Length: 347
Length: 274
Image 1 (cartoon, rainbow over the protein chains, first blue to last red):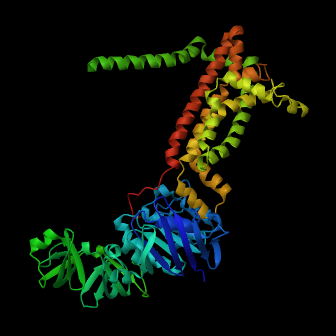
Image 2 (cartoon, chains in turn purple, orange):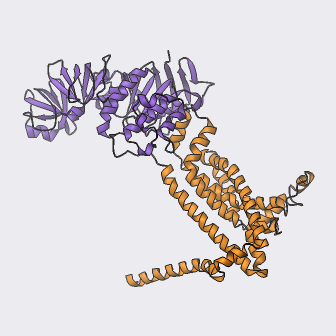
């Protein structure tokens, strides 16, 4: 079954990157701070960088090992580079044709109308689709995505994330997605591995990482709120999620069916009453705990944890068992789906 | 020094510089009217020299491009011990007086030179033939092309080359379809500069190839030969050079300008909806 197996040591200037990973027909997210060695791992799989030891196998075929080191052109990798690395002198059509027969891919990714355009004339989201089409034209056995969201403006990000998630589910290729943002990755990947200084410190589903972080770093990185509910699209293009607690939350991510709603604690603000701000989501609850973290305070309100400044807590005179309103924007939510059907709102 | 005095100083410097640089060129065209220039070019010596120059320059330049482009690519893309020494060696003709280059070529390929006997045995005579002109021109112009071409290939985006490889392109395809088109601006500029240097080659040619009309006498050599016999012909050929030089300068500017279009790093676009 086209499984990708790797067990590698890759020397870098500051440390050795160690990775031992098995990726079936699924998407694995590789999250960590910049300089943790994420791109190094993708480069090693693609054959652009030589590990000092270990092995890379795809469907039982050795790409790298004791006596093997296939050239990049002799591996079968669909690599979407961070800045996409499109050929600036070629049209969209030719970029894709460079890798192989791109028939149907332009239509499938919604860029057929741009066939004659040069990369410089495209928006970030369009470039990403061209890079994806080009990588897929290679008919790869492994898909590697390096920070697929980083070059996009926040406005496009949500839409592209939904599209990409849909595409990855359809392709069912062993896929590794690299990102520094945990929630971006959590929304795309079936499993997430957290990489710090070249070592995987924890791996599991996004839910597991949020619920049981192995250490403070993972807690900080993944430290999101996770609440479960059932999603359905609304007429205005947003998604409405009825939480298990009965409360209703609105998200810009598209989904249908059972979902996990993830929110960063620093995206949540607290008030005594529902305020007249742009936040669409308000959850009323009793303060269960106030925990100091440096100059901030982690305030537990019902199912949510908000991170606010110490000054804000003082100003509002917050104390445990007070009733407050936790507010956050629809754009601050990420929906993770597990086995649920997905729909896209952009068609 | 007061602001006003400095202003005058700069203005005078600029005036002197431009007058000095442009006066000889203006003088060439003032000495002989344009109509006379054209008829002077009808002169046998001038016509023969033009044919010899065009032929030898074209062959030498083609050879420099053919051999120099892959050489520059290798030197720009590969990191190996002694790389900077190798790059420096290719620049030797740049610092040599052309006369010394001529002597060197004679010592290597001349009848009594290093390879003289071997070439003789093969029935090849190089000294004082058109082949000698080609070798001399190629020798002096190649570092101009190599330097520019190495810089052009070094400026290529590493990730774009890497992308081409992961997409299944072997080294030949990466070179022809990605590296050369992306470096085209820089390669074109280097090529124009080298061509200009090759067309003007004088010292190495006169020593290694001599100045035989219709065989080895190129345009610069013809100017020198006509200096005593028919100054008008020397002037006419010089005027021709000025025109060719101007054309090459324009080509250079166009190539360096076109470069910005071809090497555009992916930048976030302004609009996202289409």
